[in-house]
View 1 (cartoon, rainbow over the protein chains, first blue to last red):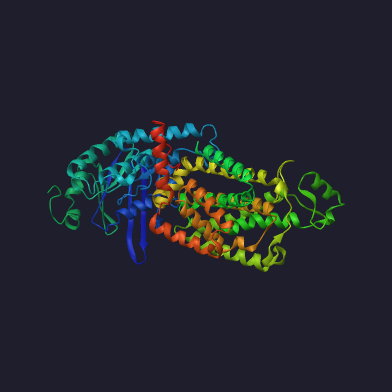
View 2 (cartoon, each protein chain N blue to C red):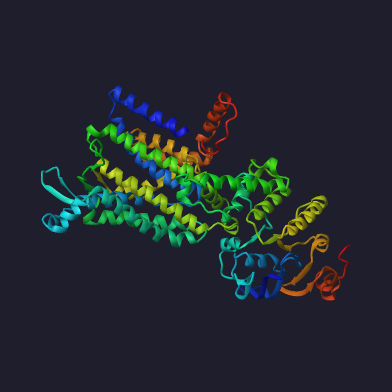
Amino acid sequence: MVLFEAENIRQCFGGLVALDKVTFEVRTGQIKAIIGPNGAGKTTLFNIISGIFRPDEGCLRFDGAPIDGLKPYQVARLGISRTFQNLSLFLRMTVLENVMIGRHCRTRKGMIASALRLPGQWKEEKAIRQNALAHLSELGLADVADRPASSLSFGQRRMVELARALATEPRLLLLDEPASGLNTKETDDLARRIQKIRDTGVTILLVEHDMSLVMDISDDILVLHYGTPIAEGPPSRVRNDPEVVKVYLGGEDVNA
Amino acid sequence: MPVLFLAVLLVGVQLAATASGRAYYLTQLIMAAYYSIVVLGLCLVMGYCGQVSMGHGAFFAIGGYTSAILTTTNIAAARDSAWGHALQKAGILFSWQDPYGSQVLAVSPGAAFAAALLLTLVVALLIGYPALRLKGHYLAMATLGFGLIVYRLLLGSSFTGAADGINGVPGWALTSHLTLTSSNTYRVGNYYFAWGVTLVILTLLLNLVHSRVGRALRSIHDGELAANAMGINTAGFKLQAFVISALLAAAAGSFFTHYTGGIGPSEAGAMKSVRYLVLVAAGGMGNLWGGLIVSAILTFLSLRGCFGTYDHAVFGVILIAIISLAPEGPLKPIGLWIRGAFRALIPSRRSCHGAV
């Protein structure tokens, strides 16, 4: 079943064509990777999917319904969550509060209920806290829950971002270079983690430069080059695609 | 808990002032309470949500002037008409005697207060909606312009009393024992009303910032894009916070005008708006307690004339000193110290972060 489709996406910044004729789909339960050299338009594509940019042309469909033109918060409510390449945790808040923010779109008590502490508000607040703590524990971060987010190491921050994204209960999770800045051991853990998340029913779309990670866990790969797709398919096929080898891998073996 | 402590302290101040024959201090404390309500509201917008408003003096003035104009404009034509009687019965119109002994039939203070809030709601939405959909300091620009316009309009219009403002505003009889007016008979009552309202607002805002909504506001301050991507309607929350703080400023302006019996255009002046901003910053930005305490003390001293002709300069110096020496406000270190002392006395209660 197709969970997400992008059709003929085109995005220009002034005279620069960042994306053109980008068409692909993500099937439910897949781990799909988008690869390509720097400047290929991968992050731009993520920003379009999550509603931060509105594409100049083309359309996006999530679960059959069009989502282009929606604001980021509306996209998140529909069940598409993401992490950021250059981490964007709320640094003045604690780790736990960061993940609690993820619960925002699945909870509803507003200004009046909060200010007056109306019945139910406390219960919802407790549920938010417990759910956020569960997500932190799942990623092994329970003992840093009350620390300021700014005090964490880079690797830990990546995990908090992941916990925050998962707390929104996404059906499609966008991971923007989740392995960048991680060492080999951490990257290995991340690979198992991503597979585990997929096994809980979350479909994953991944932008990543770490080829061994991509080849290891992806079911399907889309290769972008200067904003246009040049190949798509399972790792075994993409790895041997002559076009990909020529423009992207420079003729070297991907496992080298 | 700390709110109760503050309430006890306020009772103590009243008893001490009355016992020592310095009950006139209460007058400035009442005015300081109303100004502090503006600071509390601005604290929500600036400190938690990260949006700068340079127009809160104007909202205070809109509240005050609406009350002043409506309660002093004589609608004598309505006196003998059927609809006039009906409105009087409904409490929308009321009759009062001005200082020269003539009867005035005007809008009642309660109805005028409601009108002031309604007008403020409309104005705040008109300014906030376009400005807050954008990221960045557009609200500061919009509210600065708005403040200047309101100030000039008040100064140039005859129906607002031009440079003199409006005087002879009637008291607001809330109960048979409490009228918002500057008469000495009601001073103690007014003191408890003003500070009671302030503490209620403080409590409501403290509840708000320690909730799902408060977290959302702080996340907008920390990273608007990420907050939006995490499912928070950032424009909506910024607008809500802005409108609430504008309404608080207008309510304070209305109470203040009934209490002092008048209001002048300087309330809408840029210096006033900047002063509220300084007080929020001096309290530690995202710190309702800090804002309230600093505002109450500095406003009281200013109203007592302690800073003399250097009044504005003193606030300027405070702003520079805070920004360069203690960007988190001077109360944070003191608060940490008090909390430490509390912890030592009462072992391991659940921590109440933020309530410094």
